[in-house]
Length: 615
Ligand code: F6R
Image (cartoon, rainbow, N blue to C red; front, side, top):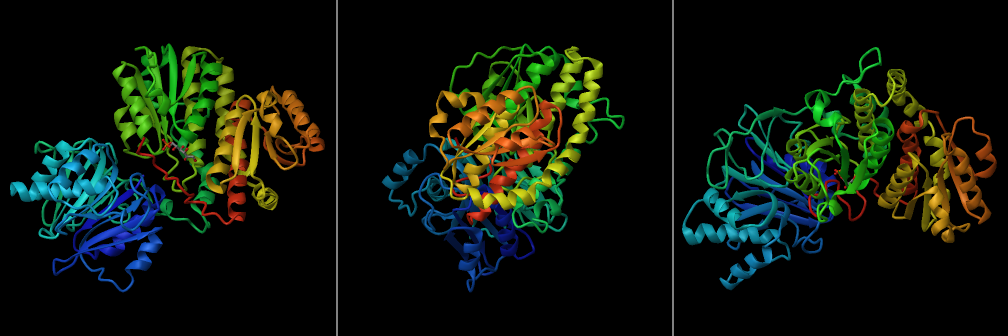
């Protein structure tokens, strides 16, 4: 949460910073700000409550010149969203400006200490403490900025990605990282860029360094990138090449990123399987499994950890691993797992799932598993993020940057990777026949085409959506593999339309939620033809008998449910275990169109941020 961006070089900084903030807006959007040092050495700081567009409007007519600057888009943790609490924060003398993503846990202790020495604070944030502390250390010890940052960060407990400018040294930006992501880019023309992820940098250079925890980078005009640690020991982080294309970062004619990402899914899944499933479609090769075959194949148990949508993908993974590989699986919310005292064995495999690769709870769960000696396998989308770097091995889902805050293509990418992993392990463990394995691999490769067919329901769903905008509550029902799809469908609706929705295993409905059913409550049932089909029909009957309004997702050609449900949405048939890849599409579209009908900002739902880097 919170996005940070910075630039120093030969170009005007303002347009680079604004464009960078727009790309990072998915990380938070309750306020934004920037600091620029102009050619006269003045430090100009501008902040506005609201979105990046509000900041831009605020900057009209102001001095926005300067070839060095830092900028921030905020997701509030300490202090309400307001222009005072927006970043950058500046030091008492007005000399330093600082932006921060993360949380300074001991900020109150530090604040009291500084206040007792006469330093006045402007904001209610934890961040302001950092900039005041750095200046205090600088002036009271008569030392330079880098040294002061090192001394200050030694006193700080918490997480941070920070960037600081000093109007007395306009040729330098200093940035540092601890548990919050930070990427530095550079080119041959003496330009440096920094950002929370590579998306604001990709337009200008493909040469980047992902900073490690404890790294402090000095971006100094005319000098090579210099990275040290808190004890001033020089570090040598690897230079990497960004593989994000600009097209992936634009809306490409769609009104919202979410819709673009929903429609991208067939191609995303093709990318996800490319090079992993051979041309004959009879073999899956995951290099992570080749490299760590023994560990994975002989796993005594799999524990899947994740949050939100990634946790839902994990629930599908559980069914895949249990039914295909006969390995017992537990699926845990990372946020709960980290604070319990879970029993973890050395021969457990912990699978951590995360789109961003930066979710604080998932990172902490991995740390716990590693300490217990378990083998940790990551499933991640963001290249070079913290999770792939701290897991023993893993698989990227390769669905490209996901910018809409509500996750769509990452979910289907995660389920695809889990399917490939489960099939690979099942084949290695001989828990399914060679023939079945091949049939399933072929079917998996056909999913993108079937998704294209499922996307054709878009117009029907757009027509249906207005019917549901009045709803205060909705119920999503599914069984087996479709139960996590119900959870995911409900989450999508809650997130972007602010309608309360619950996902439930269809048969559990009669143990409580059935009391809620009346003609006011839309009930969405995933009723595709699988082994629980007849049972789900009974559940639909139970809803109907209580006056409930049913919209059912059915397998194409289904005539029975058509007679029972108010609306049916037909989907192509596939194997039961791959049905979530198809059935999630109309539910994503439904949430999208309902939110649009309600006039909501689909890509930037209130209170949410894409990358949850705080607990
Ligand atoms: C829902 C959504 C969130 C994320 C969750 C985990 O649409 O996006 O629930 O799934 O915050 O994020 P990652 O996968 O980045 O760890």
